[in-house]
View 1 (cartoon, rainbow, N blue to C red):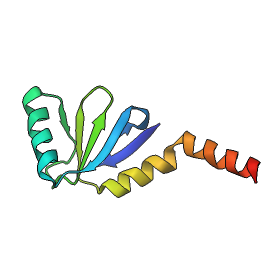
View 2: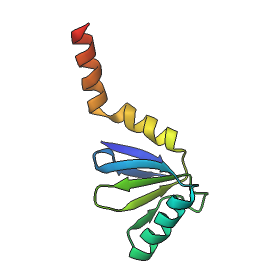
View 3: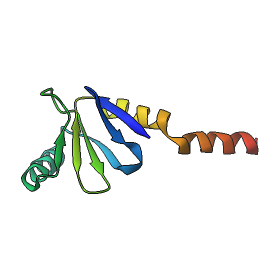
View 4: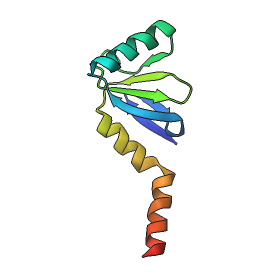
Length: 92
């Protein structure tokens, strides 16, 4: 399932490993390293980077949206969430 990460950019939610805030020093170092290795995708359109998304293939994607917003969108689009809700309703 594709999830909107801002400014007309989408990611495959099945390929996401982590969603992190971009303002910590370790994340800034990781962004710099990814840029050097040319595995960085900047989807901020020049805005302030708020989120770093790490993909299974090692790429890092930058977004100007808050991590909570992206996580919520992934939760809304996740078929796994729907399966969990169905399982819970079957149990109770």
